[in-house]
Image 1 (cartoon, rainbow, N blue to C red):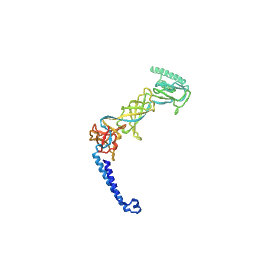
Image 2: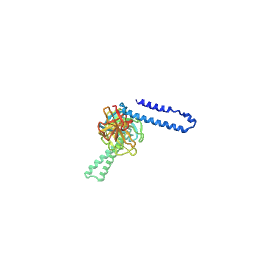
Image 3: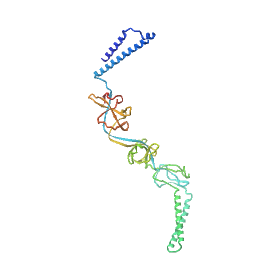
Image 4: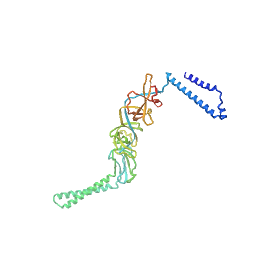
Length: 389
């Protein structure tokens, strides 16, 4: 019926135009009759306006009588309260405080090396020996001199207790004995430096020198690298905005992408210094490494639970719109009938933290409220919609 009325109206208008014999547009242009051209234009514009009015009336009538009206299809989700945990995700780097280069304390020829790369050692184990250059022979002389000084002192001490001899003789003997003893101790300490020992339990990671090498002191003189893989930690930088929620002993999840391994750990240390360049502070996370898989400088991803809401409402971020003033809103369903038809109602919201593609709504909606998901971007406030869940 709609198309019949439109056709009849159009034919009537065309017929009324065709009954009058008028000059063609080309003839009017040839005769330069601008007044007639303007008159013709006004007549057509008037007829066009009349047609538009008729079409509007017909559309309103059709909308009133058509029981099969086509409504925009939308899908919805129901608002519900859930436990929401927000995680701060950081990039970290594995370190160990027991990762050092071992240098000699005295120069000389590297006489022997007792360990090889990959070997486990204990604190105090002798790793290498530097030639003493005759110091052992000197030690024997010093020991003999020290023994003589001791004997002389003990003899003089006995005499002094018997009131035999002068006090000056006794003091000279005592001073000579003490001086020789200290000289002997210092020499033994110097001789002990020819033995290069492990400073802690660990593994020989690298051996830089070979037997027979002439060792000097200073840069480039390192002989070994020792690492303790049982004392590992992860260092990461945290934005200063989280300083209130990141505390010592807080539980943390650690993921090593290269190893495809996840483990649980705790924050060992929280720095009290905020770097003025990037407004962040450092944390250290102790990490177990029983199998020795975790190596220094290995990258790690940290997940720290910095926020929890036991009665949160979460919605997809992509259904949120903003008005000209920056206020956020979503569409909810009201006046829903048994045919799953309802009215799209603009609902202003305040949002909180996000996790993945979900965002927290801070102004709690009534539980069970239907929130429009698909189709939310193509509807208007107050528009009738069809729910197609």
